[in-house]
Image (cartoon, rainbow, N blue to C red; front, side, top):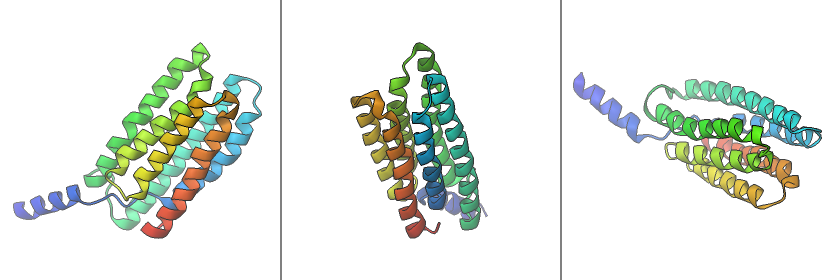
Length: 183
């Protein structure tokens, strides 16, 4: 029995986490596109941030639900093996983005937030993607490129970069993941 447990643990550690939800990514992108437009219309930085924080909350719910459903369908446990590694690699960079948002926003550094968010999210996706299918880290690289461009261009383009990243990249890579890796 101990040998079987060892073999099972070894196989779990060596396998890829394939429960990344492609259609969940498409849904997140579909939420991000109108959010970018709505955020661009806001008259104050507080309302702009509120739009994006609300969007992030909706996206997190979509991701959690679709990830859980796909993991259950594929028999890929989230609490052990590649699923645990995926989540433990993803969450710290996202936590950094949240902490920096609350640290920078009161000081009027709103212009840096879209670039920061995409860079941190890209880092999270690349890190977690090392335990997943090949398209996932490539998406993370795309986020990091767009985050860098967002920091290098005028703040007036911030919501357009957010639409391209959180909207476009999620939709594009979501379709690829859904078609190649079962939903």
